[in-house]
Image 1 (cartoon, helix red, strand yellow):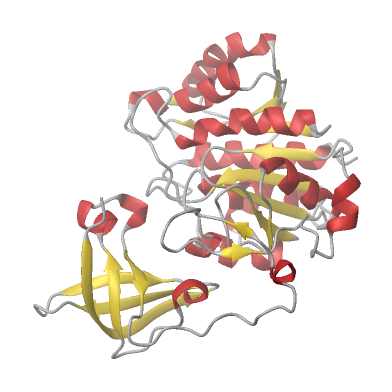
Image 2 (cartoon, helix red, strand yellow):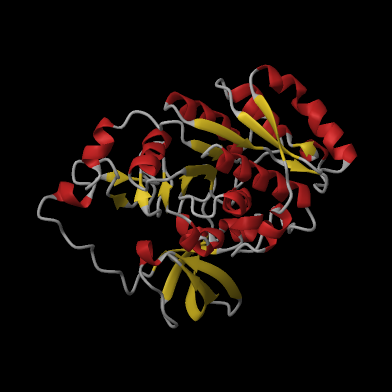
Length: 361
Protein backbone atom coordinates (compact mmCIF):
# COMPACT_ATOMS: atom_id res chain seq x y z
CA UNK A 1 0.00 0.00 0.00
CA UNK A 2 1.08 3.64 0.32
CA UNK A 3 4.34 4.42 2.07
CA UNK A 4 3.92 8.00 3.24
CA UNK A 5 6.65 10.55 3.85
CA UNK A 6 6.64 14.29 4.51
CA UNK A 7 9.42 16.75 3.94
CA UNK A 8 10.47 20.19 2.79
CA UNK A 9 11.38 21.21 -0.75
CA UNK A 10 15.09 21.97 -0.79
CA UNK A 11 15.47 22.74 -4.50
CA UNK A 12 13.80 22.50 -7.90
CA UNK A 13 15.61 20.43 -10.50
CA UNK A 14 14.61 19.59 -14.08
CA UNK A 15 11.26 20.76 -15.38
CA UNK A 16 9.38 19.69 -18.49
CA UNK A 17 5.82 19.96 -19.73
CA UNK A 18 3.58 19.23 -16.74
CA UNK A 19 6.23 17.95 -14.31
CA UNK A 20 8.86 19.25 -11.88
CA UNK A 21 11.68 17.29 -10.21
CA UNK A 22 12.40 18.22 -6.60
CA UNK A 23 15.01 17.65 -3.96
CA UNK A 24 13.12 17.08 -0.70
CA UNK A 25 14.63 16.98 2.77
CA UNK A 26 12.93 14.60 5.19
CA UNK A 27 12.56 15.41 8.91
CA UNK A 28 15.62 13.29 9.77
CA UNK A 29 17.71 15.34 7.33
CA UNK A 30 17.94 12.67 4.62
CA UNK A 31 17.30 13.64 0.98
CA UNK A 32 14.59 12.21 -1.27
CA UNK A 33 14.07 12.65 -5.01
CA UNK A 34 10.50 13.63 -5.82
CA UNK A 35 8.27 14.54 -8.74
CA UNK A 36 5.33 16.94 -8.73
CA UNK A 37 2.60 17.49 -11.31
CA UNK A 38 1.71 21.20 -10.98
CA UNK A 39 -1.62 20.71 -12.75
CA UNK A 40 -2.67 18.43 -9.89
CA UNK A 41 -0.97 19.80 -6.78
CA UNK A 42 0.21 23.31 -7.63
CA UNK A 43 3.75 24.47 -8.36
CA UNK A 44 6.12 23.69 -5.47
CA UNK A 45 8.74 26.17 -4.33
CA UNK A 46 11.76 25.79 -2.04
CA UNK A 47 10.60 25.84 1.57
CA UNK A 48 7.20 24.27 0.83
CA UNK A 49 6.13 21.34 2.98
CA UNK A 50 5.15 18.37 0.83
CA UNK A 51 3.34 15.10 1.45
CA UNK A 52 4.84 12.24 -0.54
CA UNK A 53 3.89 8.77 -1.73
CA UNK A 54 7.33 7.15 -1.59
CA UNK A 55 6.44 3.50 -2.23
CA UNK A 56 7.83 3.02 -5.76
CA UNK A 57 11.05 4.87 -4.92
CA UNK A 58 11.67 2.89 -1.75
CA UNK A 59 11.04 -0.37 -3.60
CA UNK A 60 13.45 0.60 -6.40
CA UNK A 61 10.89 0.16 -9.18
CA UNK A 62 12.90 1.22 -12.21
CA UNK A 63 11.01 3.91 -14.11
CA UNK A 64 9.11 4.90 -10.99
CA UNK A 65 12.25 6.22 -9.33
CA UNK A 66 10.57 9.14 -7.62
CA UNK A 67 8.54 9.86 -4.57
CA UNK A 68 5.37 11.52 -5.86
CA UNK A 69 4.05 14.74 -4.41
CA UNK A 70 0.50 14.20 -3.16
CA UNK A 71 -0.10 17.70 -1.76
CA UNK A 72 1.42 21.00 -0.72
CA UNK A 73 -0.71 21.08 2.46
CA UNK A 74 0.24 24.60 3.56
CA UNK A 75 -0.22 26.20 0.11
CA UNK A 76 -3.07 24.57 -1.78
CA UNK A 77 -3.60 25.69 -5.38
CA UNK A 78 -6.76 27.69 -6.15
CA UNK A 79 -9.82 26.00 -7.57
CA UNK A 80 -10.02 26.03 -11.36
CA UNK A 81 -12.25 28.74 -12.85
CA UNK A 82 -15.90 27.90 -12.27
CA UNK A 83 -17.96 27.49 -15.40
CA UNK A 84 -21.43 29.01 -15.52
CA UNK A 85 -22.76 25.55 -16.30
CA UNK A 86 -20.76 22.84 -14.54
CA UNK A 87 -21.08 20.66 -17.64
CA UNK A 88 -18.99 23.22 -19.55
CA UNK A 89 -15.94 22.36 -17.44
CA UNK A 90 -16.14 18.69 -18.34
CA UNK A 91 -17.13 15.72 -16.25
CA UNK A 92 -14.65 13.08 -17.41
CA UNK A 93 -13.17 11.68 -14.20
CA UNK A 94 -9.87 9.83 -14.61
CA UNK A 95 -7.72 7.91 -12.13
CA UNK A 96 -11.21 7.39 -10.77
CA UNK A 97 -11.84 7.15 -7.04
CA UNK A 98 -8.21 7.78 -6.19
CA UNK A 99 -7.33 10.80 -4.03
CA UNK A 100 -5.96 12.74 -7.01
CA UNK A 101 -8.69 12.07 -9.55
CA UNK A 102 -8.81 14.94 -12.07
CA UNK A 103 -12.05 16.09 -13.68
CA UNK A 104 -11.50 16.90 -17.34
CA UNK A 105 -13.30 17.89 -20.51
CA UNK A 106 -13.64 14.87 -22.79
CA UNK A 107 -13.10 15.44 -26.49
CA UNK A 108 -16.59 14.15 -27.29
CA UNK A 109 -18.54 15.63 -24.36
CA UNK A 110 -21.44 18.00 -24.99
CA UNK A 111 -19.35 21.05 -24.06
CA UNK A 112 -16.47 20.06 -26.33
CA UNK A 113 -16.01 22.05 -29.53
CA UNK A 114 -15.38 18.69 -31.20
CA UNK A 115 -18.65 17.10 -30.10
CA UNK A 116 -20.42 17.53 -33.43
CA UNK A 117 -17.76 15.84 -35.53
CA UNK A 118 -17.25 12.97 -33.08
CA UNK A 119 -20.94 12.39 -32.57
CA UNK A 120 -21.17 11.03 -36.09
CA UNK A 121 -17.62 9.68 -36.59
CA UNK A 122 -17.67 5.92 -37.07
CA UNK A 123 -14.75 4.98 -39.29
CA UNK A 124 -11.00 5.68 -39.46
CA UNK A 125 -11.07 5.51 -43.23
CA UNK A 126 -8.13 3.12 -43.48
CA UNK A 127 -5.78 5.28 -41.37
CA UNK A 128 -2.65 3.31 -40.48
CA UNK A 129 -2.24 2.89 -36.73
CA UNK A 130 1.01 1.52 -35.30
CA UNK A 131 0.70 -0.46 -32.08
CA UNK A 132 3.60 -0.99 -29.68
CA UNK A 133 3.74 -2.61 -26.27
CA UNK A 134 6.42 -0.27 -24.83
CA UNK A 135 6.44 3.52 -24.67
CA UNK A 136 10.11 3.51 -25.69
CA UNK A 137 9.08 2.53 -29.22
CA UNK A 138 7.30 5.84 -29.82
CA UNK A 139 10.26 8.01 -30.91
CA UNK A 140 11.64 5.19 -33.08
CA UNK A 141 8.29 4.69 -34.81
CA UNK A 142 8.10 8.43 -35.38
CA UNK A 143 11.62 8.42 -36.86
CA UNK A 144 10.54 5.71 -39.30
CA UNK A 145 7.49 7.68 -40.40
CA UNK A 146 9.51 10.87 -40.81
CA UNK A 147 12.21 9.09 -42.85
CA UNK A 148 9.80 8.64 -45.77
CA UNK A 149 6.90 10.99 -45.00
CA UNK A 150 8.40 14.04 -43.27
CA UNK A 151 5.19 16.06 -43.52
CA UNK A 152 2.81 13.38 -42.26
CA UNK A 153 0.67 14.33 -39.28
CA UNK A 154 1.25 11.77 -36.51
CA UNK A 155 -0.95 11.55 -33.42
CA UNK A 156 -0.08 9.65 -30.27
CA UNK A 157 -2.78 7.77 -28.39
CA UNK A 158 -1.65 7.15 -24.80
CA UNK A 159 -3.28 4.15 -23.15
CA UNK A 160 -3.39 3.52 -19.42
CA UNK A 161 -1.17 0.47 -19.04
CA UNK A 162 1.80 2.47 -17.74
CA UNK A 163 2.10 5.97 -16.33
CA UNK A 164 -1.35 7.56 -16.20
CA UNK A 165 -0.18 11.20 -16.42
CA UNK A 166 1.17 12.06 -19.87
CA UNK A 167 3.33 14.60 -18.02
CA UNK A 168 5.53 11.82 -16.61
CA UNK A 169 7.11 11.16 -20.00
CA UNK A 170 10.16 13.28 -20.82
CA UNK A 171 10.14 11.56 -24.21
CA UNK A 172 6.67 12.86 -24.93
CA UNK A 173 7.64 16.36 -23.80
CA UNK A 174 10.56 16.27 -26.24
CA UNK A 175 8.34 15.15 -29.12
CA UNK A 176 5.68 17.84 -28.76
CA UNK A 177 6.81 19.69 -31.90
CA UNK A 178 6.91 16.41 -33.85
CA UNK A 179 3.37 15.29 -33.06
CA UNK A 180 -0.02 16.56 -34.18
CA UNK A 181 -1.03 15.97 -30.55
CA UNK A 182 -1.46 13.44 -27.78
CA UNK A 183 -4.78 11.91 -26.78
CA UNK A 184 -4.90 10.26 -23.35
CA UNK A 185 -7.49 7.50 -23.16
CA UNK A 186 -9.01 5.30 -20.47
CA UNK A 187 -7.63 6.23 -17.05
CA UNK A 188 -4.65 8.07 -18.59
CA UNK A 189 -4.78 11.87 -18.58
CA UNK A 190 -2.76 14.98 -19.37
CA UNK A 191 -2.75 14.77 -23.17
CA UNK A 192 -3.72 17.58 -25.51
CA UNK A 193 -7.12 15.88 -25.70
CA UNK A 194 -8.90 13.53 -23.29
CA UNK A 195 -10.96 10.54 -24.37
CA UNK A 196 -12.83 7.99 -22.32
CA UNK A 197 -11.99 4.98 -24.50
CA UNK A 198 -9.41 3.90 -27.04
CA UNK A 199 -12.13 3.91 -29.69
CA UNK A 200 -13.07 7.55 -29.13
CA UNK A 201 -9.39 8.46 -28.87
CA UNK A 202 -8.64 6.91 -32.25
CA UNK A 203 -11.55 8.74 -33.85
CA UNK A 204 -10.32 12.00 -32.29
CA UNK A 205 -6.87 11.38 -33.76
CA UNK A 206 -8.42 11.05 -37.22
CA UNK A 207 -11.09 13.75 -37.14
CA UNK A 208 -9.89 16.30 -34.57
CA UNK A 209 -6.10 16.16 -34.92
CA UNK A 210 -6.44 15.27 -38.63
CA UNK A 211 -3.73 12.64 -38.29
CA UNK A 212 -2.42 10.70 -41.24
CA UNK A 213 -0.91 8.09 -38.91
CA UNK A 214 -1.54 7.29 -35.25
CA UNK A 215 0.64 5.46 -32.73
CA UNK A 216 -0.90 3.57 -29.81
CA UNK A 217 1.11 2.52 -26.78
CA UNK A 218 1.04 2.64 -23.01
CA UNK A 219 3.00 5.23 -21.09
CA UNK A 220 6.39 4.59 -19.49
CA UNK A 221 6.62 2.42 -16.40
CA UNK A 222 4.72 -0.64 -17.63
CA UNK A 223 3.55 -3.36 -15.28
CA UNK A 224 5.03 -6.83 -15.66
CA UNK A 225 5.19 -9.98 -13.55
CA UNK A 226 7.38 -12.14 -15.79
CA UNK A 227 4.42 -14.31 -16.79
CA UNK A 228 2.72 -14.71 -20.16
CA UNK A 229 -0.42 -12.78 -19.25
CA UNK A 230 0.82 -10.52 -16.46
CA UNK A 231 2.07 -7.64 -18.59
CA UNK A 232 0.19 -4.43 -19.26
CA UNK A 233 1.47 -4.24 -22.84
CA UNK A 234 -0.50 -7.34 -23.83
CA UNK A 235 -3.33 -4.84 -24.35
CA UNK A 236 -1.87 -3.94 -27.77
CA UNK A 237 -3.76 -7.01 -28.99
CA UNK A 238 -6.96 -5.33 -27.87
CA UNK A 239 -5.82 -2.17 -29.66
CA UNK A 240 -5.56 -4.15 -32.90
CA UNK A 241 -9.17 -5.23 -32.45
CA UNK A 242 -10.31 -1.65 -31.80
CA UNK A 243 -8.44 -0.31 -34.84
CA UNK A 244 -9.92 -2.97 -37.09
CA UNK A 245 -13.42 -2.45 -35.69
CA UNK A 246 -13.17 1.23 -36.62
CA UNK A 247 -11.91 0.57 -40.14
CA UNK A 248 -8.29 1.44 -39.48
CA UNK A 249 -5.21 -0.45 -40.63
CA UNK A 250 -3.30 -2.02 -37.70
CA UNK A 251 0.49 -2.12 -38.04
CA UNK A 252 2.30 -4.11 -35.35
CA UNK A 253 5.64 -2.86 -34.06
CA UNK A 254 7.20 -6.09 -32.79
CA UNK A 255 9.41 -6.18 -29.72
CA UNK A 256 12.55 -7.74 -31.18
CA UNK A 257 15.88 -7.98 -29.35
CA UNK A 258 19.12 -9.93 -29.20
CA UNK A 259 20.38 -7.81 -26.29
CA UNK A 260 17.84 -8.50 -23.56
CA UNK A 261 19.35 -10.81 -20.96
CA UNK A 262 15.99 -12.48 -20.32
CA UNK A 263 15.42 -15.46 -22.65
CA UNK A 264 11.68 -14.75 -22.89
CA UNK A 265 12.42 -11.42 -24.58
CA UNK A 266 15.09 -12.58 -27.03
CA UNK A 267 14.11 -12.84 -30.67
CA UNK A 268 10.46 -11.80 -30.62
CA UNK A 269 9.40 -11.09 -27.04
CA UNK A 270 6.84 -13.51 -25.67
CA UNK A 271 4.68 -10.47 -24.94
CA UNK A 272 4.44 -9.60 -28.64
CA UNK A 273 3.65 -13.23 -29.43
CA UNK A 274 0.89 -13.27 -26.83
CA UNK A 275 -0.59 -9.91 -27.83
CA UNK A 276 -0.70 -10.61 -31.56
CA UNK A 277 -1.01 -14.39 -31.42
CA UNK A 278 -3.64 -14.78 -28.68
CA UNK A 279 -5.32 -11.42 -27.95
CA UNK A 280 -5.60 -9.82 -31.39
CA UNK A 281 -8.56 -11.43 -33.13
CA UNK A 282 -8.35 -9.13 -36.16
CA UNK A 283 -5.48 -9.33 -38.66
CA UNK A 284 -2.61 -6.86 -38.48
CA UNK A 285 0.48 -6.20 -40.55
CA UNK A 286 3.44 -7.32 -38.41
CA UNK A 287 6.66 -5.64 -39.48
CA UNK A 288 10.05 -7.37 -39.59
CA UNK A 289 13.05 -5.21 -40.51
CA UNK A 290 15.54 -6.38 -43.11
CA UNK A 291 19.20 -6.58 -42.14
CA UNK A 292 18.90 -8.30 -38.78
CA UNK A 293 21.75 -10.53 -37.65
CA UNK A 294 21.19 -13.89 -39.39
CA UNK A 295 20.78 -15.83 -36.16
CA UNK A 296 18.31 -13.29 -34.81
CA UNK A 297 16.44 -13.22 -38.14
CA UNK A 298 16.07 -17.01 -38.03
CA UNK A 299 14.68 -16.85 -34.48
CA UNK A 300 12.23 -14.13 -35.49
CA UNK A 301 11.02 -16.06 -38.53
CA UNK A 302 10.47 -19.21 -36.50
CA UNK A 303 8.59 -17.35 -33.77
CA UNK A 304 6.29 -15.59 -36.23
CA UNK A 305 5.47 -18.60 -38.39
CA UNK A 306 2.39 -19.59 -36.29
CA UNK A 307 1.08 -16.01 -36.44
CA UNK A 308 1.14 -15.91 -40.24
CA UNK A 309 -2.19 -17.72 -40.48
CA UNK A 310 -3.95 -14.63 -39.09
CA UNK A 311 -1.56 -11.75 -39.71
CA UNK A 312 0.45 -10.55 -42.67
CA UNK A 313 4.20 -10.60 -42.02
CA UNK A 314 5.76 -7.62 -43.81
CA UNK A 315 9.48 -7.28 -44.59
CA UNK A 316 10.62 -3.67 -44.62
CA UNK A 317 13.88 -2.27 -45.94
CA UNK A 318 15.98 -0.44 -43.37
CA UNK A 319 18.32 1.75 -45.43
CA UNK A 320 18.43 5.21 -43.86
CA UNK A 321 16.66 4.20 -40.67
CA UNK A 322 19.78 4.12 -38.52
CA UNK A 323 20.52 7.71 -39.50
CA UNK A 324 16.90 8.69 -38.83
CA UNK A 325 17.06 7.13 -35.38
CA UNK A 326 20.29 8.94 -34.54
CA UNK A 327 18.87 12.27 -35.72
CA UNK A 328 15.79 12.11 -33.50
CA UNK A 329 15.03 14.90 -31.02
CA UNK A 330 14.99 12.70 -27.90
CA UNK A 331 17.34 10.04 -26.51
CA UNK A 332 16.41 6.45 -27.28
CA UNK A 333 16.27 4.07 -24.35
CA UNK A 334 14.49 0.81 -23.57
CA UNK A 335 15.02 -1.02 -20.31
CA UNK A 336 18.13 1.11 -19.83
CA UNK A 337 19.59 0.21 -23.24
CA UNK A 338 20.26 2.82 -25.88
CA UNK A 339 20.30 2.53 -29.67
CA UNK A 340 23.67 0.85 -30.01
CA UNK A 341 23.04 -1.51 -27.10
CA UNK A 342 19.71 -2.78 -28.50
CA UNK A 343 19.78 -1.79 -32.15
CA UNK A 344 17.34 -4.45 -33.33
CA UNK A 345 14.60 -3.21 -30.98
CA UNK A 346 14.68 0.35 -32.25
CA UNK A 347 15.19 -0.72 -35.86
CA UNK A 348 12.05 -2.88 -35.68
CA UNK A 349 10.03 0.06 -34.34
CA UNK A 350 11.38 2.41 -37.01
CA UNK A 351 10.55 -0.16 -39.70
CA UNK A 352 6.96 -0.24 -38.44
CA UNK A 353 6.83 3.53 -38.80
CA UNK A 354 8.27 3.33 -42.32
CA UNK A 355 5.65 0.74 -43.29
CA UNK A 356 2.85 2.94 -41.91
CA UNK A 357 4.20 5.81 -44.02
CA UNK A 358 4.15 3.60 -47.12
CA UNK A 359 0.42 3.02 -46.62
CA UNK A 360 -0.22 6.74 -47.18
CA UNK A 361 0.63 6.50 -50.87
